[in-house]
Image 1 (tube, one colour):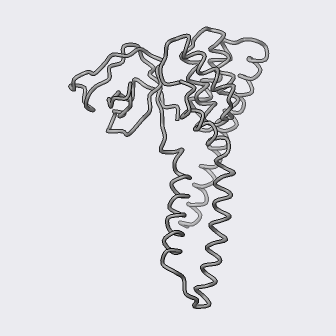
Image 2 (cartoon, rainbow, N blue to C red):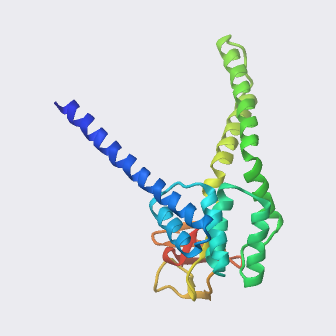
Image 3 (cartoon, rainbow, N blue to C red):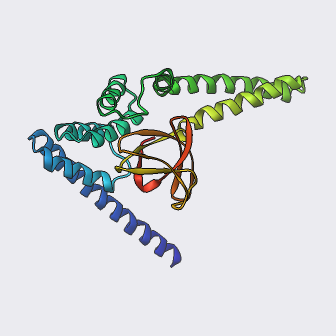
Length: 241
């Protein structure tokens, strides 16, 4: 009887999930139709409605939303959606457009410096690099395992190198998830010395600036602003990476 209840619950949950997915697909098709017919205002609302209810969505939707907000001269929203698109599809043209918007609006954090170009290269080729490292590491593991089975001597330095090699691969795989940035979304956002509403303000900044995140404490992000540590409230920013 308990087994039957579990099966019934599973199919009930599955049916709700399928219905929800179908509804979102219909809404997305409507948004695409509005976009093609140049009903840009309605298309923007439809796309953002889908985005609010769907955790995973095709990167092209971000690009369309960036274009729609460009038509409305909403540079902040355009920059936000370009950042989200760039996170999934690292494209140098998008990077240049983000930099162009930032220059015209005097926003910091989008400079085409060596670091950002290095991040671009890593995003574009990290899959190939990690794949090669995994294949090489697996080969070395098989060799060491073969020696171990045959009871052959394995120098300690070889074991140490193998350990640190895999540690480096693990760090490389997890690196993108640890590197985060936020965009200031509210005008007159206060940066503070400590993660508290009562802490002394270090500066008041306008919307649009992009900051590197170093950590989080409750509702506060620890960020780097003009090479100084500061805290910003999570409600005042969009996380874009």
